[in-house]
Image (tube, one colour):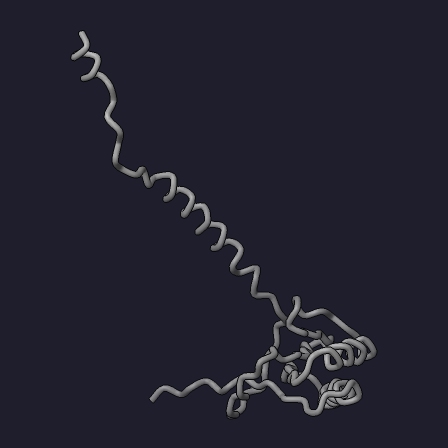
Length: 146
């Protein structure tokens, strides 16, 4: 009888069951696929097209002023999504960022339908806040196919 009991005992299984790991990976994949489009939020702009060399990379991310086609101003200081501001808030927030961060670039992205005066107002606010210069962001022209 002792021999029979030994045969019925289960031997240790030396295989790893990977099905639960595959299930977890599939759930994570679905979560990332659903949330990825939501992460890239911004202001929709039709940038003017121009040939320009890209700016050299800096240690600090640039502060970007966005002006949409309705003339609304948004400030993206790199810490959150662009926040809508008025002219006074733009000045105050830029002044705060420029005072606390060294060597930060200030860039301006404006919709191509915005009047020049609105762009100049944003540049004046940046200059008054202490920005040494303001770069203009453009969209490269589409490449022509031969």
